[in-house]
Length: 393
Image (cartoon, rainbow, N blue to C red; front, top):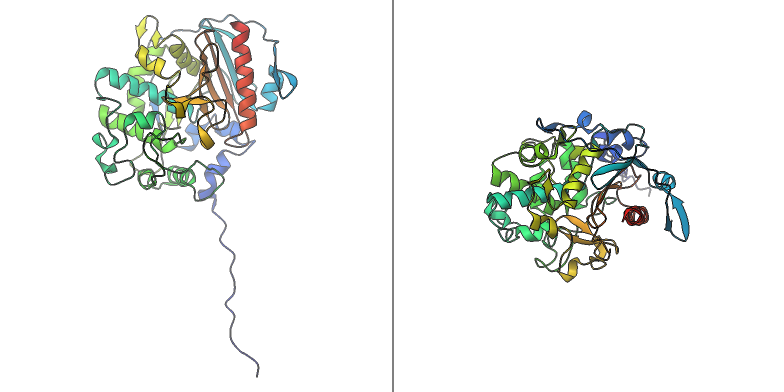
């Protein structure tokens, strides 16, 4: 007898829509050279006003025909820019612009660049300012002292100090190529109108607080929210009043905001500023928090950002979520084995704010890497930046 049982057709899984994939499209080469300079065309924004004071950076150009050695070969800076997709490159020595180039198709001195996680380092400065004001009581305060909606989550007992050093123990490793990873769900909520707060609140605990380093956009994002709760101001407004208006900046900066309401800036990654204005932040750090004789960021806070005495945060001790040539402290990547105690802000796709106080050198490098992370390109970049600092030292 012949069976007449119907077979249910097997349907292929639906392809993700453009809306679901827009984060990937924004970051893909060669489109990212345009998107990283036009985020205000793609997302809602809030301005970080520079105010009226302007302090021009002196120009003292000099040729940088030096080479750096990487993987048993010598390379020029022109080769660095080609190999690491540089879009903007500014070098300050003694507060003067000594070298400046814009290889990016859409970049220039007045172009505001997407800085990604260099934003985290700026958020740290704002926390230091709020602590000095007494607006935030102490880095020993808990997240829930300012955001009670995190009661009942893995962040309930987390202190601000643990957020600053990314030792909260909350959340998994940030993996961009796994569709359902925490960072991808965060990105989709940001771009697609979902609840970013719900994504962060749902993060699981993976280690005891303070026990180990785990690079975490969530930790930095909560710091931005704590700042807003403590100050009663948006992140952009507070950054303008207490930082940008004191830098003598060339242009307003801006944060782009989440599509979902209530819209929020990403203290973990949505600041956009010109390369020269970012260099002014580096100069502030090189000068122990001072601009034109005014103490903007407490000196001790700047020093805290140059390195940590916690063994799990030392250079080469960060574990799987940090490269061997880095340590971490206060939302900055540290290079403690350098004779000049250099440290740097780093953002995905190759954004750098490198500061070497001993050499009095600040370097800004903006890039459009084809991938979010690349250990080899990062190592080559740091090798080249340190070679430049050594040259001037």
